[in-house]
Every structure is written in structure tokens, then in C-alpha cells.
Length: 492
Image (cartoon, rainbow, N blue to C red; front, side):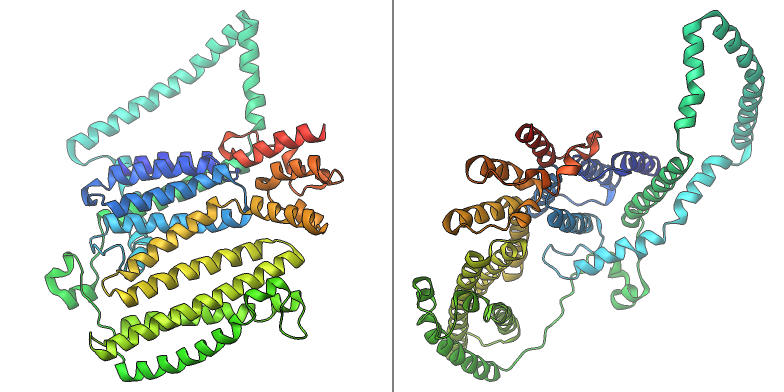
């Protein structure tokens, strides 16, 4: 039954995706895949916890972006991220090792079920099909073979009889003759190569779906597991690895020196950080020079500081004495200084955008700085409160940040920023504005009507594709369909 369902799901997969771009087909197939895994993986599946439901909600919301938006970068990232999250979810639910959601070793378990556990079951469908074709042995097998031979004889007898009957019916009824004559034309329109690749697609996908499932249902226990744990290898693996510890005095010395340098930097930086908006800049620097100078270095330093914080929190065991309190104070001081660095980098990027406009790279840089800032706040909270589960919080914040990036409507935001910049100083990169995805099209149409009638919407990078929107429902995308409709109305 699992193999038959895998073949059926593979047929649906090729129908949804062969020759079609991602659209409504993506969340639809994802729903069917979950149903397949839940139905036939039920004997091994553990009850869903709150974290499992939340992860599934994140996956569902990410899959809906293929229907709602059309940003190419995010579509590529989601094409990679969604399968990874799905594999993680089913590994957590079905794997016999039963790692927690926050255990880094679950990554190795995901890869184990994707490759070795699945590949070892590649012959399994062939064995199942062989049993079905050969039938069972003994009296029952002989009876099935006799029945099959009788059916074959019946087909051979019916072939010439059907030829005579169809010929007479065709002569008797002109409409029936027309229907019959249409069959050769229909067969001639079929592409042999197209059907061949559809069959290959279906067979390959059915094999992947079935073997991935059966890797959980009939997983192998490796020799190294048995050697390490004996018979307990079949039980949940919850062994803990002890990380090496760093001497608290060494860590304190390093943190004091780093903190002193950062405090000096912050004192100097604050003298002109926010004054740059009022025209107070370091001598000899223009706004563009100031905005460009040191931005990458500040982001790199923020990342280094995050590593220092994590290393100290996990590798230094300082206790609750004076040394422990001093280390926590130094960590909080580094968090504060890093926050000033991020504010400086953020203000520099805003100045740069005002001078040169808004782009994908600059939008993503803003998002990355906000993400780093959130991680730093969590690290500072862990430094103050030792009971904060930092690893879990990092994973949760990372998923939420990626989800927020998908629903932030990047293209519309970039278009809005460039339009506002044009209204303030009259500068506009029209070519870049027209290169944005269809998510920005409604805003561009309103901008043309209200402020910039010379905007060449006819040169919109997407317009040639939008003139002939997809007729197949599998590729339906709300952003593309809306842009096609509104552009047609605006250009008529």
C-alpha cells in the first residue's frame, strides 16, 4: 500500500511540477506529502508536541509565499529551506534516535535518513513488484497464472471482434465516426519524448518517496552504535558530549582587554555618530564616504562579538562568585558596545541609501543587522540570567526572522523607499525600479499616475512574461496575476 501510494503521489508530483513553475502547486503537494508520511509512517510516529506544530506552521507559511509573492531570491531560498525544515520535522517525529528539537546532532540524523537509510531500500520496490508479478508459490500461485492466461486469451479473441464492431458502428453513425477519427490526431499530438521524461520523473520520484519513508519504517542499526551502546542502540540515544572548558582567569583577561578597546571606540563614535545627520562629520569626509567607510568592518566585528559571547557562555565555567559576576558584567558591556556598533552601521547604511538609493543588497543588510541585534540581546539576557535556553531561543528567532523576511514585501519596500527619495531630492534610478519583481508593480503604477508619468512601464522587466500569463493552474501566483491585470489596465 505504501508503494502504491508513493506511485500515486509521484504521478501527482509530475502533474503539478513537470513544465510548470512553483505556484499553488507547492503548498498543495506539501499537504499531500504530509498526509502520505502521516498515514504510512504512523507505526513509528511519535505524538506531535507544541514545537512540532509551530515548525509545521512555519513551513506552511513559507510554502504560501509561492502563491502570494514573486521575489526570485526568496523563491530560491525557500526552495532550499522548506525541504530542509520538512526533513528535520519528519526526522524528529519518525527517527528511532529521538533527538530533541534543539540537539545539533539531529542534522546528522537528517542526512543519515536522506542518503544511507534511503539508498539501502532502493531494491525494496523491485522485490515487492517481483512478488506481485510472480504471484505466490504453490496451488494459489498456479491458479493465479492460469487466470492470467485466460484473460490473455480473451483479449486476443476480442481484438478482431472489436475491429468488426467498430467498423460497422462507424459506418452507421457519422458522429461516432468523427469521434473515432479524432483518436489518431490526438495520438499524433502526444510527444513521445515528453511522455518518456514524465515516466522517468514519476518513477524516480516514487522511488525517492517510498525509500525515504521506508528508511524510517525499517532503519538499519549501525555497528558503531551497537559497539558503543550494545543492545541499548535500539533505544533513544541521549548521550551528552562534554565541551572543553576555558579557565575563567584567562577568559576574564581577554574580555577586559576587548571591553576596554570597545569602550574607547564607543566614546569616540558617540561624538559624531548621531551628529552625522546634522552635518557633523569627521573632517574631510563626505556623506557617501562616511556611509561607505567601515560598514563591512562593523558588521564583521558584531559577528565576532557574538562568537565571543557564545564561547564565553558555553566554555567558561565561572560559577556564582566574584569572578562569575565580573565575567557577566564584561559580557553585558560588550553587548552594549556591539549595540552601538550596529547603530553606527545602521545609520551609515541609511545615509548611503539616501545618497544612492534602495536595493536588494541594502534591504538585506538592514534585515541582517536587525537579526544580529536580536541574537545579541538574547546572548546578553543569557549572561544576566543563566537559565535562559539560548540554543532554543536562537533557533526560534532564526525561523521567525526568515519568516518575517518572506512576508516583509521586500520589492514593495524598496520601491517605496526609492519613490520617497525621488520626492525629496528628484533622484531616481528608473532602470532599477523597473527591474523589481511583480510585488512592486501596483506601487509603480500608482507612482506613474501621481508623480512620474514618464515611467516606462512598457519596459518593465516582467512585462513580456506577464502579457501571456500562465494558463496552467498549477503555476498560479497572486502577485503575477494581479500585476498582469493592473498593467493591462494601466497601459490600455
